Length: 305
Image (cartoon, rainbow, N blue to C red):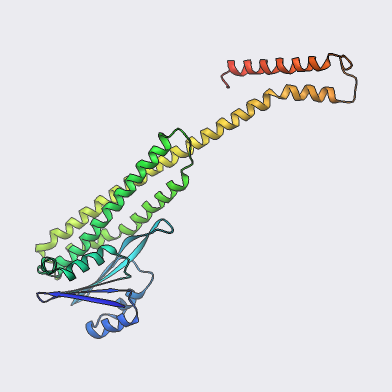
């Protein structure tokens, strides 16, 4: 467990990374939290929620973290204990937006004063808002990737099968939406159902979080719909290319069909016309050439070539 603490004006912010049993012992001895909340902190499977008690709120949130080796976004959990004069954030150390914000407040007195002087409710909003601001560049990066895939599919003369890149992008968009969507109701509940902790004066800030969340989800839905269009276009172009190859192979196989029939006919162990003629080879070659020309003319007139 790594525990860091900053204080200002009677308010405390404790940030804990890599939670373990020592953390549970620390929280149990110093804050007397409900055992089920402490159990949820160490649980590997949880869902965003708010549990309200007389003296504190327990909040579970999840935010996206990129796993470079697998090229996917995974969820990283943020556990929050929100009291009247303190904020405790618990995470696995992968939430860079949280760690950067905490480090800035810890080392810079003016920043610490700016974000802690207005109370814990505003501090929590600043933490959540920094994570929303962290998500927007991710969405923009996905939109840029969509434009690059569109150019590869529609504008490059050489045909490429982009299905793997499309499926990775589509999976990430789905993961991002699945991770972020549950937070919307949490933000709504924070601003409307807990006036004891979130006062009327700062309620508008939490409503702004909901607006940002709606924008993010809307952009994700739009991006996902466009990726599905690119997926269909890629499949159509690949199918069309395959059909052209099959058509070409079919044309050539039909052209040589009369030659094969004639050669098999003369290869049979029976008497056939002109079999012993000294000009049989020239006759067969002329026949082959004539049949090829005729077949090409027929295909050309039918626009099969």
